[in-house]
Length: 161
Figure 1 (spheres, rainbow, N blue to C red):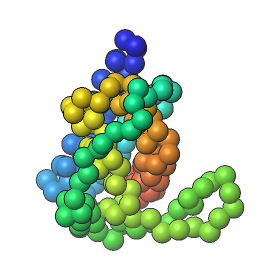
Figure 2: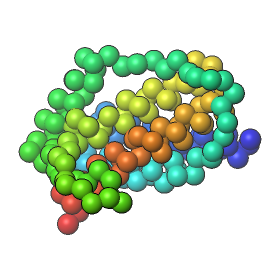
Figure 3: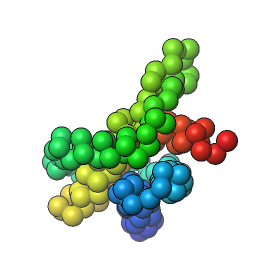
């Protein structure tokens, strides 16, 4: 379990760095913000890939939910920061032949911000470590990991090329 404790510290640090990068949006120029957030996204993805498969001790967690007002405020702030570069086209499942769908950095892909903020609170409210690890890995593999990659790909095409 000590390896898992170290990994939990690394994941918490990477998730916190990503959250702080998103929170810094109002104070930075767009290109600096996107550079910072893309670095933190890459680090977070790398650490999340190492999250071990564990069985939870309990059958569920009661996560605190963020209200829609906070979500709407963040979404507006990010869309304003990114401007017309907010939208892009992507394929949802690269393993299937599909029509492209429109994505939004501010609306859809920074939603992982809230998922991570909520999941980081689990330890603070006394959820067993195995449950926390289970939730972190499950959420990464089933939801926000895919969105994070879509956002990172869009940022790469807009600002790196």
